[in-house]
Image (cartoon, rainbow, N blue to C red):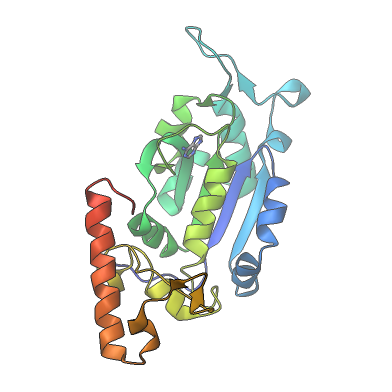
Length: 240
Ligand code: ADE
């Protein structure tokens, strides 16, 4: 697996109709660690920048169909007002990412790629999603967090932020957590081995004896084998 080293900090701007959703996210310990370390997760309220009357941001699809689409003129003016440049120029300077169910699937490799960027812009669609011209003319990427449809991009944006921020130095309490975890380079892309903590025996459910043995080489070997086993199960469609 190709690896990229995380930047020291990442400045993330989230364009959303629901900036208040991110207050909870920003208050979580690991996110606060990232903010204290110099990263940022700033929300831009799309509605605050709409040029349309009555705070309108969306409209019905041409050709008919259910739902409403985020308008291109509204996002264009939100982006250009916030960055002070023509919004078509922005994607040459930083990744401008639309969150949508049809897009590149988020995985560890993509999270690492994003964590190596100094700045990201995340666009949260609502309702049926985006007018396609937003994606064609204003975005560098479309990212999906999975093959299912959410009511908007906000939760997906939080997932992206979480996966990215935890890769930055100092964000997790113990740096080893990010190094040797599922799909990491240290595990050659395989899922992580199982973990156990006290009590060593609970209702007769015993922790594997090797983990209590103190033999580091054997523990390593056992973990490696379990990790490969899980990988093989996941490839075969079993439990990952
Ligand atoms: N918006 C709605 N559904 C989504 C998904 N699965 N991933 C990213 N953004 C979305």
